[in-house]
Length: 239
Image (cartoon, rainbow, N blue to C red; front, top):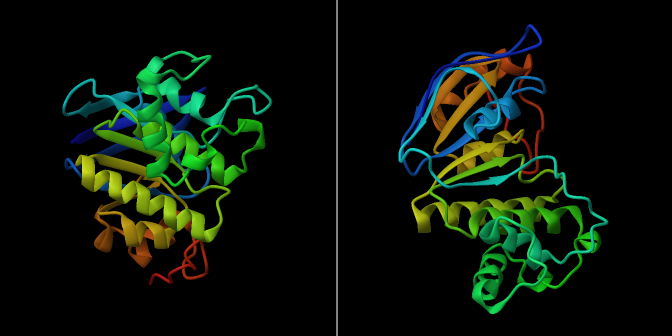
């Protein structure tokens, strides 16, 4: 369960988020949708405890383990490391200069679940954008956290790859009874995969079950337009 109450963020006198409140039941899949600059990534940082804010963010259980796939990868792609080592950092909390038998099976199983076991020994500098996203997803899932937060997980991934990655996320949610929060620009992906949707533009425009929150009026209020193609799934016309 995630309970957000009257969350506000101001940075250098500029309002980023204002009076954001929502309650997400355990085991839900929340899609967060909104325009660029609407505060989506700031909301993610607040949920992760990386952004100071007013209001409250509560998890149940409190202080939970959270798996996270960032939109922007800060890892230097020229760093001489293999994909399996990157995944293993989620278990070791440091860079493992070798992946020993104590965690190798878990690392390879996590990669297998996202369709990337064949990449285990590849240097990260040789991975495509989509392949690197899969490796980061394996890293987020390996410790089987009760919460998974994904900031644009399908960015830079082709249509087939994006659909496959979201199926992996869905499978993880079902198998682990995990709660998922996913920032996305893809209205179709939200409508198809999410149980709940939050339309956000500094304030909450709409929140609730995806079928009722993703209305033409809500999307028009957030984006100023609605009805043409968006995202990897062909673009559903709302309204």
